[in-house]
Amino acid sequence: MVQYLRKSIFVICCTLTFGNCSGQTNSKNFDLFLSNFENFDFPLNPTEFIVDREAKLQSKTILKKDYDEYLRIDNDTFWIFKDYYEYGYGGKKKFDNYWILFYSRNFVPDDVNLQKSEIVLCTFTLDGRLISSLPIAGGYGDSLTFSSVINSVNDINVKYTLYQNDKEKTYTKQYFVGDGYILKIRN
Image (tube, rainbow, N blue to C red; front, side, top):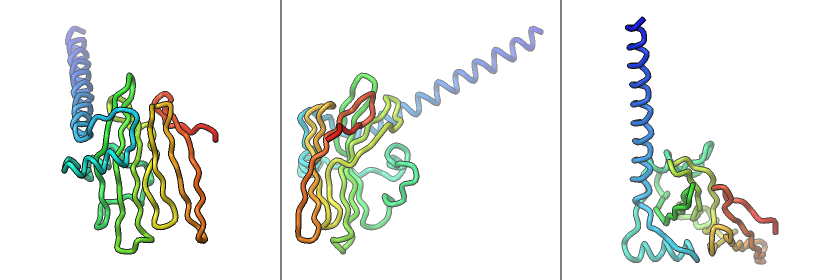
């Protein structure tokens, strides 16, 4: 009976130790991932932030393993790691129970009509699980451009310009972050 009790205690201790170490590794990996992002303050124009970072030669390329672990959305087949694709770190800001990050991703083949560029706003749990993401700036060929200003987590404005049949249509959508999720305000 005592022998069985000792074995049980040993197994429980090993399980708890392994579980705690595993969580620490994930947290440490996410902390390392976060270290590539620069802190930002509100109000924020994410496009200007990234351009300024590149002008200061502070831009860093996101590695495939980091993109796949933290940023890839399930079933996404467009954003891959091949020629003509680029991924760059942007900014970060920590809140009580979540992180807000943004990064850039670009597909730049020779044909301008196929080019696609986005700055993506993401929210994460404190331990690195992706909660939600939303493209907030960029362009798709010669058919759509969009830009944003983030005044606070409660005031995210994305302005879209659609180009079709030699006409422009401009509209704005408003978003906010609630419980870590990026949500749209009805317009």
